[in-house]
Amino acid sequence: MTTDDAFWATLRDWRRDFHAHPEFGFEERRTASRVAERLRGFGFTEVVEGLGGTGVVATLTRGSGNRSIALRADMDALRIPEATGLPYGSTNPGVMHACGHDGHTTMLLGAARRLAEEGGFDGTVRFIFQPAEEWGRGALAMLADGLMERFPFDEIYGLHNQPGLPLGQFRTRAGAIMSAEDNFEITLRGLGGHASRPQEGREALVAACALVMNLQSIVSRRVAPTQTAVVSVTELLTDGTRNALPGLARILGDARSFHPKVSTVIEEEMRRIAAGTAASYGLECEVTYTREFIPTLNDAEATAAALAAARSVMGTENVAEQAEPHTGSEDFARFLEHAPGCFAFIGNGEASKPLHNPGYDFSDAALPHGVAFFTRIVRDRLPPRS
Image (cartoon, rainbow, N blue to C red; front, side):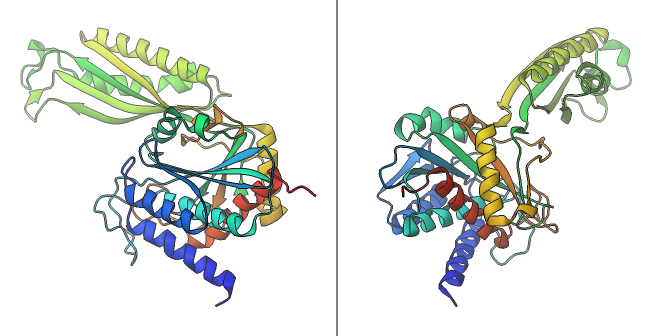
């Protein structure tokens, strides 16, 4: 086995170890400990654990340059029972790496090792291993814990794997690349009663069904056709039973958009439609609307740099600069409020199961592409002095 083969075999083993020991957001203690241990093994002397709860930040400086860039990976897993049947499947029942954060963490570790051993840049690199991305709290926790004050950087880059995209391919775009996610809960209150005597009460289920349908008019009739918006009802819960009409119904769901104005329209229309529907059935109504993720907005200059780096290591034919925006959400967006940067996608293979699927697995064959990109962007953005 050549030295390079040994390097990739080591990364594969690390990735599979992370996969076998998934941890939910803010519970990534083992993962964070392994990350910190390996960084120190590469020779890093500045490794900080516990930032934002379970986050890890490592700093690597070469030369005398005063610029710094950050590279970010997420570490958390999902509460999904794994159904891959893999020999390195989850040993934590009910939790699995169904989004590839095991691979993201490993790619960043690989880049950290390469840069520590080989250098080739002048300045400072911050390696950010973030907790709790899946529920949109990890980036905020790290920022609240002083990330920018303690570990400042001029720009930031992140990667996510994309099932269905061939291995070795790279996609991104300037501007909106991932959507905001808003959550909503609508509660209808009336008066329940016997299923045989509906006239004696003000039951909530028929009104809830009507409201679910009425909400569909927000995107089709209140949002401009040129704007992207999604309103999805995901749960309808009542306090009824088979022979009792419910007096309470709860409607839960989420909304996606790429612009704050669209988010505002969705909320305003939802409140208006919910109040009107409730009134027509003689019910009381309460709407709770929260903004969990903001849109991920790539900086134009940073995106151009990311595309150039990707072309140099993956080939021009494998790089697309006008990727379709994703209606999924990412809390990488929170970092982009503090520094310009770029979030991009690399292929996880055409045969890959979808993200958040019990049968999903990150492809080890994607590891070299992520490591190469992270290494190249550092050397391009912090070029060594001649």
